[in-house]
Image (tube, rainbow, N blue to C red; front, side, top):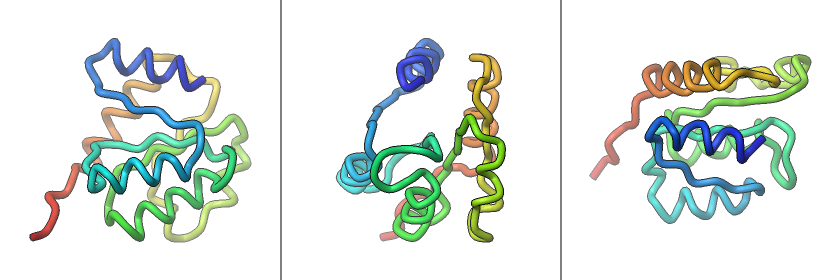
Length: 116
């Protein structure tokens, strides 16, 4: 799934960096000072799950754009109140649905300029 997502987005001129573990993603995001337009995370993943990752990102980076994906529709019931506004894309999805969700999420949560 990671390869499909990254290939699809790169073909549409998005710059993509991928990780299979949330802790490595957090380390990288810290190293780039949270300077990204969007984070896509599966809810089920090794280490910190996607919901915990989203919570950590919001605590550290503020209103960062996050798109959650999952094959289990029931996962939405696991979200905390602080995550209710997060966009969700259910697997399986088409490449068109993916690109639309990415564009809508970026538009809804535009990158904030770092405060000095």
